Image 1: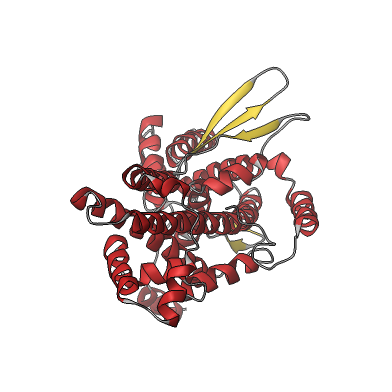
Image 2: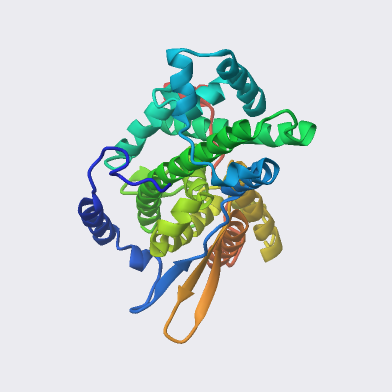
Length: 384
């Protein structure tokens, strides 16, 4: 079952979404950020849906064991209705049995009742993401529901390994098969909702990364460890930069996003990450300046080691490490580019080293004046 706006009671927003995308691209000029020539395009390599494979494998197991389970077309809510109206001993046995197979009574309720809190909110957030980015708590709630569905199916597979589904009747296997199909369909819907949300988040991340990059272009590129933009000190917060990197790479791991996002946007994100991480790694870093202030020649290797340490420090603190392959398709050739932490690290290091080598002083610079403490400054002021 594929999720659509109509399924969620919403209205199609293709025209609005297209208009917003056009406005977004014109404002940022993502083709320029992606460094594309006229006629170039970017293809995104699809990624396997590992979660769906687990569901399908579990369905195959039940199908093989249950024989007739393959042809079962049972309503997942039938069990819920019987329990609500007049549950019999056999119905209660099934609830207990399915709770044991799936790991909890909550799992049974979530798969059989449309009024379960998880399911109702997933429908609500499915409509919400058509109009705006989900709040952090909303996205977290969907991820929890997705994890709960995966856990239920993992429990079903463990139950099979331990029992071989012995003791289940054909009818019970048919209903179990239907519950697993319901879990698979719900998980797919949530993957799509989260994927739509991640596309919006990546657009915001690209806009912010571009703002940082634009500001960095106006920096006076020297090695004195201090840099000003419009008479104000420029500052790139490590926390914010990690969040931006995590946002991009969290999206990279979503199968729906990989199949539906504009590859040009991802290539723009890749280029901006390299530029911003590179700039962050060397500019204004006291450790880099100290190399030039020690009164002896500085070689490229020592600069590289300092920069590599800064790049790894910011990237290795990120929580996500997913990977996509982008193919830049030009008129006469194709170029494959990894969108991965490893690729960003490698190219940011190279870019930063080249930038620092260009601004290396030819001689030994005069060390900066010693920074005075507040007490010393107070004494100087009183003495004046």
